[in-house]
Length: 352
Image (tube, rainbow, N blue to C red; front, side, top):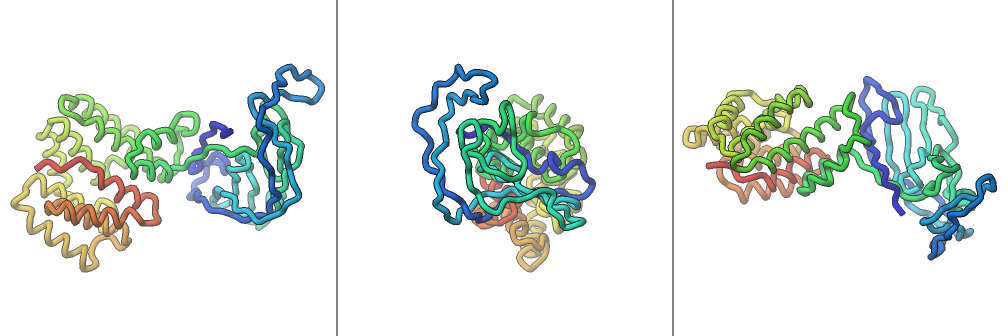
């Protein structure tokens, strides 16, 4: 049974608040592992376990007492958390054990990391592994000490949004696993993207007052992220969708006059905004920008370049070509770039 635990691993929950960048990533590590047979089929009805005997009620969980001496090499998912001082590893499929932390300044391990996964009949339900730091609540070793835990990162939220799963992304930012203060930039950006996508979904005719209120609340919550030209463009799109075309055109006019960083996700948006404010007068600007991207201008990153080209093709009215660029860009290894290209495929149509 999975434990309902949400872990926003891009936070500094284990590493502490640091001024340097906190990194998180997931991969697998192969350990010599001793096979465990399936658990007993019927949970023990032992709710009347006697206090003080050392016997704890485990119902409705099953017992896991069927360990073997059969050794094999098994891949285990590992979540890495790292800042300038520590590199820590968490095993989400073994109860979320903090497997090890290495002091990067001295090179020493903070505590012993077991080199094999061999379960023993120790925990209330039986199976338990030695090593690292585990949860011991409400009883010693807990009833789910080696059960898989749910986990999520800001990257998971972005990938959920890329697949139109706003509810899945929103679940990551619940209050119990998302402290509102002192989040790393990547987390703030992912949360801002969720807000923006929710705004676009809620921007229906007759709801302009709600749209305006959401836009007004964005800057106090996300600060300088509200100044991103891409965000401002989508604010204008939300205003247009709800029926306030004048407000949208005022916003797009400001975006069209701005100068975007050639290396950023904002690159195409001044041209895209200009194509909506002045369709006839911006045609040459659109084609010039497209030629620039094709000849090496704009973002140097391939995924961002595909995103920029797709947006410029959309400005030119070539939606099928744009969709092809977005599909290719959605294969990029960077979660943020995958999100940009993936979500662009589901953008509301541009008003013409």
